[in-house]
Length: 265
Length: 272
Image 1 (cartoon, rainbow over the protein chains, first blue to last red):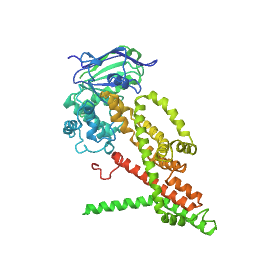
Image 2: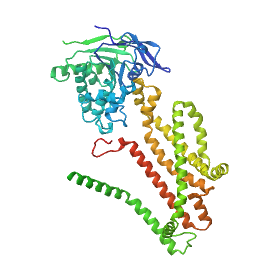
Image 3: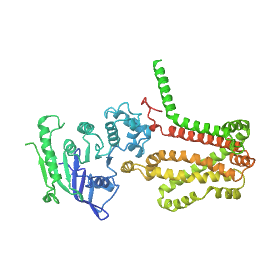
Image 4: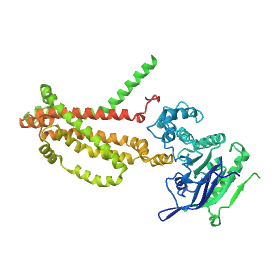
């Protein structure tokens, strides 16, 4: 196993007197898709706020490529909940936002993003406003805005939470295909068990607040997933097991984080 | 050919729907004017007390030159005062957005300034600054400045938190956050404030003129009243109402031009 890109070492965070995160340790390998799955309000988004330096903590250490996060120079491209597209910017100018913030001239940024529109299923919609696009297209535009920043790692914060079930399933399938091609190092926060199982190499299960890692699960189902009956059955078994853990947290699991692997039997 | 036909057909359909939409309002105003006209004719009330609408219109036409001569200074005071007020409100809104403590210090003072009755303040400002343009500009600014400042401030605060979180994650400094997210987010609030304030502005200018002026609709109304010519007072009212409506329409037009993304174009094509 190569050196991890991102390591979280016994992170804790308190909001005033309220403990939000407790003793969180995680690692993400290069090219790995890792999900954080937990109940609503368990502090998943707080974790992302720590990573994007919106908040800081004194408890524990975060390192990227071996360097403390503060010295790592914003290694993350962040995709927030819902799409956060600017309604007053055309799609092309929404996707160049990160590059513009980095100081790139708008015309140059447009040239760099334009060739990617076809791959993201947005060709022909460059000059439309976000309100003219469907929910799925808006999410693809938001993801394009995220990846075009060319950062070492993606942070996806419940990116499909606001979509209807059918669109969401389509988007998950599409994202898996995109990930298979590009092998982004990515961390996904979600409370959708199926989504996590469908997309991830590994899943960290969080307890309700204060969030602790109650389990770490390797998913080594073959990709693309969910296309044949045999993997569907195994995925369903993993989903059921995860739900069982999340709905009836076993007190023995808290504290330590035993790894249980779902290797091919 | 068929395209232009369908295009003009669509415009015709839109116009009919607009007229249908406006019909109740037109009918209501029309019947009020008719009742007024009938009452003025058949009740035997003197035209120096209540002139009929037809007489008001006739006199407005008769005195059109005088009305125009007096409307221009009012328009000038309104526009100059409002422009100054907009610039000041915009600059202060930015300062206050970057220094929230200043906002907490200033807003109570500004709220008190809004409680001052115009009737009392207008003569004082004329007393202090004379009969020229300056007191009118000041009064217009006084009545429009605070609503615009509040509209802008509220607009900045209405920025989606996720948008700010996104920009912060990209490493955008505070001023970039303001320029890229907070300022555009405030546009709907700004234009809502603009539509209300522009009508206040006309009222403010007329009030200032009423309190003392060489020319203007306000002083014209006062003189007409003192000469027992309510028909001319109402004619001036008509002119000021028309003026206000024109300015209101200009504000709506500016809003449409500045916020093309709110227009739902049926063609769906690029707008620029």
